[in-house]
Length: 139
Image (cartoon, rainbow, N blue to C red; front, side, top):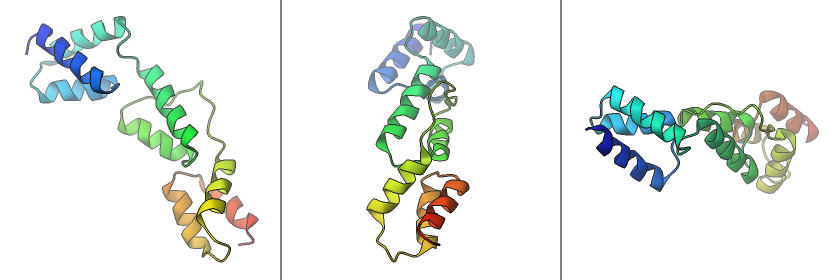
């Protein structure tokens, strides 16, 4: 695939969904584009502000934080899956508040503590927050 075809393909892919450089590189490689052509296309897209990993990482982090259902670790794993850096300027999720709200909405009074701990762990909350939540309920 030459430069013009690769550039057109990249624009079509970016029209569907914002992609990180790594995701875009992988999708172009699958279609048989050479690394030199991909590097040139990505450089052009960076200059045109179509690809900006830092901006995308901040938007993805803010999206998951706004949902109010996930801890910092979960959000970081989602960023890593999309090959994005962890944004430094974005404020971290207030895990304690989010975890308390989740537990109060999801579980009844007599729920087994291990079930709550496992739920919070799968949602990416830190062990210290989980311990504090469970101790707040008297466990």
